[in-house]
Image 1 (cartoon, rainbow, N blue to C red):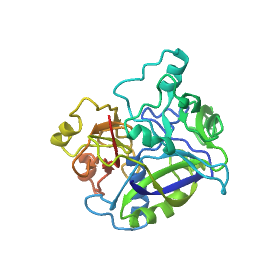
Image 2: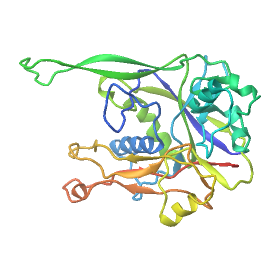
Image 3: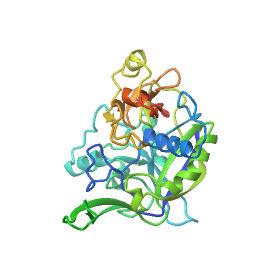
Image 4: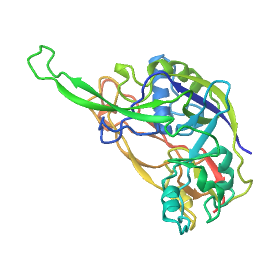
Length: 329
């Protein structure tokens, strides 16, 4: 049974997670593992902590997933991403089929059945009644423990007051009670711990300059019941294959299912803030691959050539190494 160190983030302010289109009126509902490691690396650099030459902080992390906790004395319900299916269940009830299709997150208490190759959604299964929107759990959770609301803000292009103020809208994530995001970590977390101690004051997401994204965190351990042997594995992180040979290995087999996304964005370090990073494609969490024989993924430098040739050169690391769980298909 794999056991991980986990970090539970309790947000003390609204959170906005920008998407790749930079549209502020829509917030993403998760922070990916490579974004988290990039943020940790950034705060470590600001603190003057030496960053390893290869960008390896000594550990691997998952993406950030939701959890619900009613109060500090209550148990915590942790969610993991629903593995992408190679085929959808055959349900005669159209309403049930639509409910199943919507599920994105599964309680860790039920996740072992998915990892073991079981079907949660056969025609008579009780779990149909445990679907709460995007979430599958037997626990009692509010309908919207992770809610979003849109607020209006005003952009002033000309501080002299000569120009008209331009209104715009920001979608904010607000957590109920003691809910929040958590992530799993493996390996030596010394640098991760040092970075997290500062990052909680720096904040995550966008619009941190207006007070968004601040959090407090606690650590714990989480064991996940997984099969000892399997031919496939589900990724809990963003994954960038090490090379074509590893890519071919990962995609071999009829049980694979995956989604790709483009990673890049603007450079946030001075004096390069007008430049974009190089782009690369990565597999999203929940993707299922042929089980790799060893560590999966790689760290890449997305700094464009103009940055390396400048007076202030530095790498821009993107960590595409994934935490993976065995799954039977």
